[in-house]
Image 1 (spheres, helix red, strand yellow):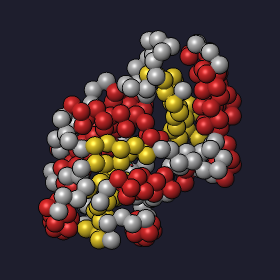
Image 2: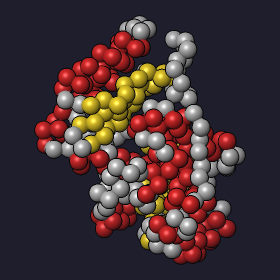
Image 3: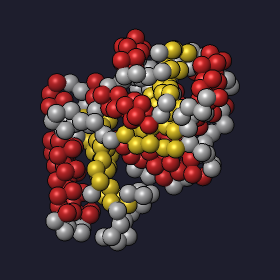
Amino acid sequence: METAAELAQMNSALTGRRAAGDRIVLVPTMGNLHHGHLSLLRKARDYGDYVVATIFVNPFQFGENEDFDSYPRTLKTDLQRLEAMGCDLVFVPKIKDVYPRGPEHATQIEVPDLSSILCGQQRPGFFRGVATVVNILFNMVRPDAAVFGEKDYQQLLVIRRMVDDLHMTIEILVGETVRERDGLAMSSRNNYLTPAERELAPMIFKQLQKVRAELRAGEGDFKAVCKRATDALEAAGFKPDYFEVRRAQDLNIPTSIDDELRILAAAWLGKARLIDNLAA
Ligand code: PAF
């Protein structure tokens, strides 16, 4: 596995691959890799001929009072894990190379509508930061395909919309959510949980499952089921940001019971903001 910190170094590794017609697959990450990321790597490995991972903690997607400074940075272990997973190239760019004029002066990508609801409402500017950096990474790596996790369902839809609107020719592959044995979706931010909070955390998944079971049993009052789930989480000590049933394709409010539905939740537990979702 090759590690590149400079664009020129990455390009010299990729030029021959492109010329050989290899299918290059990108897995963008912010590092602190866990089994969730590794399953994205596996997907990339299965699909592509040459797998590139990026590790870049993107300052532009963190709000002023968010955890950019304290976000876990574990480069050494990340590189070992990527190598063990058969990654071919890791690109670890510096902030000044990604944003030569500084993040706040960079050309920005705004995906309207989708970016301002749910997580976007709670974290203004977050999806602008994600779409902007993913677009930059796409331009730097120029992959044939890229893999994103379904745990970040709204992010996945934002990226898909960007690719569609900008007529990019990059295929977006989806990695299923990887869970701990007790159901908690794997996330770097699970590290912020105290042992007591960690025991409680799978309750989000349990509530999602409960809502799914109710919908499957014919419950059509989405507001009422979500309110019951929100109340249960609150009573247990979570601070829910939202718990919603939405249309799977665009996260709009469902208009008919025939819509394909997604159940999505975000809640604070101590210092960790946990998100999760399920197909209804
Ligand atoms: O999901 C993430 O880790 C990040 O949002 C991403 C896609 C790597 C962009 O910084």
